[in-house]
Each structure stands twice: as structure tokens, then as C-alpha cells.
Length: 239
Image (tube, rainbow, N blue to C red):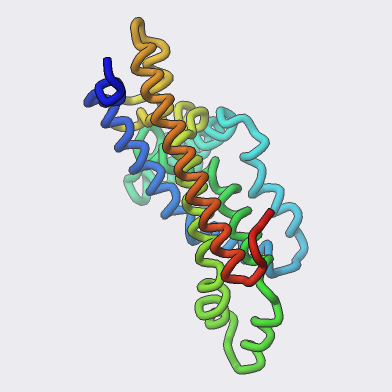
């Protein structure tokens, strides 16, 4: 079997790949405004409870993904406080749905997203904002016309990193939304399914190779964007 034939995905594998791309895209877009606000708050403001907020944001990085998925199930399940409210008010359900998979991946990738945006904002010269303030620019105006344009490469790097990490999320997804073909069976879950199926070794190897290639492409693109940010800020190339 040649390489082209070996890498050809079956219809179910194609569905898993497309579903992964949709879930990752939804999670990144839904997280973007919250990651921007949180990154700016942690980088530019000093307030009581800042350390606690930072710890809560970073908490999913040190928790087992299954624990995060369980927490989401408790909160957003049919009998959970937020899940019951969504059902009663908006007639919406998240557990065992595609949108729930996006929520689970967003919960796991949010710390990475915030960290990259925060670091990007901390690299900015605070004197620029001071000059803009003396010229009469308000807080929102300074953010939209000064801070945001300068950190756009960092924001894009955060988006790419979060997107790549979302493609590989497994534990939180399978715990919160299950492994439902066409609905929640993303690429990692399809790989897990193939490993459990008799004779699924070749398909599992194919999906693992695809996952590695997607992750590598995301990391390379994120690194390039980060270097663009450093170049724009006139700081040379990061080590």
C-alpha cells in the first residue's frame, strides 16, 4: 500500500476530522473576548484577588482533564444549576452535544490562550498608553487603537495555539459529552475508538499521524506569529 492510499481517510474518519475542526473553531471564537479581557486585566491591572484569579484561570492546566469534564457535567448537565437554567430559559442543552464539546475544549485551552495574550500585553511599553492618555484618549479608545493593534500577532498566536490544543483534547470531551459518532466523536475520540476495535491498528496509526501533523503545523505557525510580535515591538528575536 502506497503512502497516498494509506493516508486516505475513510468517511467516518473524515467526519471526525471535520467535527474536530468545527469544535476547535467554535471553542476559540467563543473564548476570544473572554481571553482578551482576562489577559488585559492580569497584565495591566493590580487589584485584590488578582493572584487568585490568575490561579483559577490556570487551574485546568494542573487538573486531570477528566476532572474538568466532570465539573462541566455537574454544572451544565440536565440537573446542574447552569444546565437546568439553560434548559428552562433558552431551551438549550450542552451535555452530549457538539456545542458541549466546544465548551469542554474551551475550558481546557483557555489558560494557554490567556497566558499568550497576557505575555504579549506585558511586552508593550506602558509609556505609550500614558502618552495616549495625556492626549485625551479614554480607556476603551486606548485599548482599541493602541493596545489591540500592537498585540494582534500575539492574539493570533494564542488563537492558533488554542486551536491546535483543542484538536487534541480528549479527557474533558469524552467525560462531558461522550463519544457519539457525528456529534461528539472528534479526532482524538476516533483514534481511541480505533484502538479499541479489532483490526483498527492501521486506522489508529493514520489518525495519530494526522494529529501529529496538525499539532506540528499549529505550533510552527504560533511560533512564527510570536516572532512577528517581537519584531514589531523592536525587541529582536525571542530566545
